[in-house]
Image 1 (cartoon, rainbow, N blue to C red):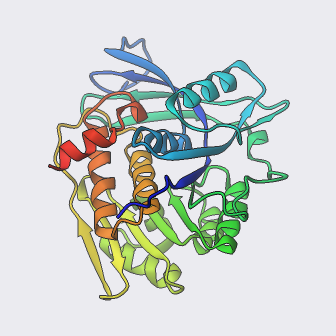
Image 2: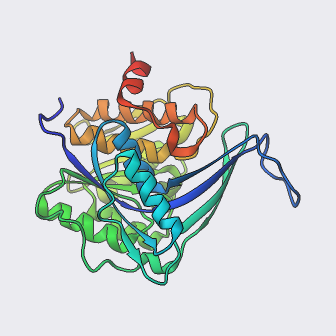
Amino acid sequence: MANEATPKILCVGALTMDTIFRLDRLPPGPGKYIPLEAVEIAAGMASSAAASIARLGGSVSLFASTGDDEIGRRAVAELTAEGVDCSHVRSVADARSAFSSIFVDAAGERVIVPYYDAGLLSAPSEIPPVIEGTFDVVMTDVRWPLAAAKVLKAAREAEVHGILDADTASLETLEMLLPLASHIVASEPAAERVTGETDPEKATVALAALYGRDGAFVSVTAGDKGSFWYDELEGEVRHMPAFEVDVVDTLAAGDVFHGTFAWALSRNYPIYQIMRFASAAAAIKCSRFGGRIGAPTKAELDAFLT
């Protein structure tokens, strides 16, 4: 059941400004294509997760990097308006803020063209007060590895939950971060990269064998195939089927899943309920255009599950 006080969550990683175009079909080649709809939003894996936590009523802070430019200031202002504490977002001199152009087709699939300035990825000189016990849960993505490693190590020292959103990244990055997390939520492609297994259930078993030895929770998300996690007590893989919805836009579905996972974990729900909440929130998001702005409120999540 939920804690009495509102738990505090820290999200660490990407912050971008995304321009999202909805098209009948993805561009097959050179030419000019007129979108059916378009939005511009502050996003990125950790940032979208943070916004989804805020929408659920959670208390969430973001640790990310921007350039000292108008794009970065707009992104921070937008997330602040969503209810995300951005006081830990650092501005890096002589670096450009990250931005992306994204195309979404009628089936909800997408093409993403992101720009990241390498200067945004430098090691942080300091991190938010995780060791001091300020946060109940931290969640990192793989886009700012040096910060993620520091924060996950601090979470372990503080004995608080450390979630890794293990999405596609270099094998070196994944192998650096996976051992540091208390809760691993890996995408199917990332799990395959680490384990060599193409089947998500087998990949879950293999990932648990590699990184679940110290009691870490291990799961793999597999889109419309649902999500899988290793039940250490039973010694078997559990499966949460994906909820059926009319898919409009899959962009940020994983980020909403991770944000909802962190929100539910911070409230001490049983793992089955955590996975159910996260799966439902991701499904709701997929039924709406606009990336992370399709994330549900708590009332919408409850209504969907009723």
